[in-house]
Image 1: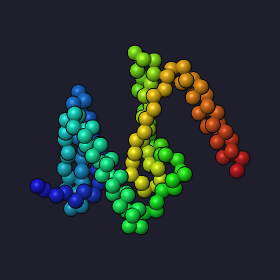
Image 2: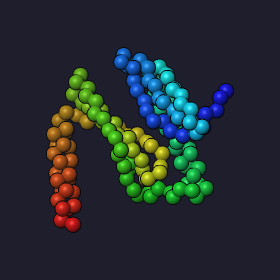
Image 3: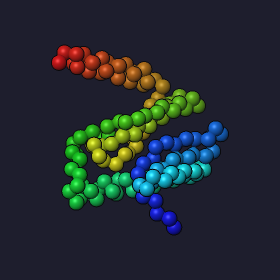
Image 4: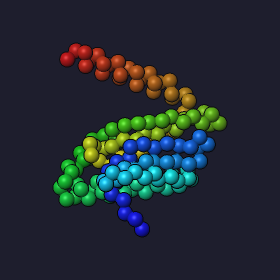
Length: 139
């Protein structure tokens, strides 16, 4: 088994048919490699990486390298999201990716929202966004 000391993952892509995922890896010695896998393996890889990232984070908190997260803080600070409609059930799945604190492992949360609640949620989000912009200008 080869051990790669990875410096970065500068790029990734999906095949035109969506069946393959490729991730470029640059090693510490400057060599480049490509990790190519079938889409069906991607979910397993993501779950494994999320688990390992969480274990690594917890160990760094335990040995004092990172500060423990505030238990009263937000569940996650959202870094990305996507909304997937389910027209058969008149609902949407909202997936959120983020971190509970800076340096923490990436996590994912999701919720399902019914079509009748979507307009009110959108209104409330826009009202909060307007309020935050107004407060920022007032400073």
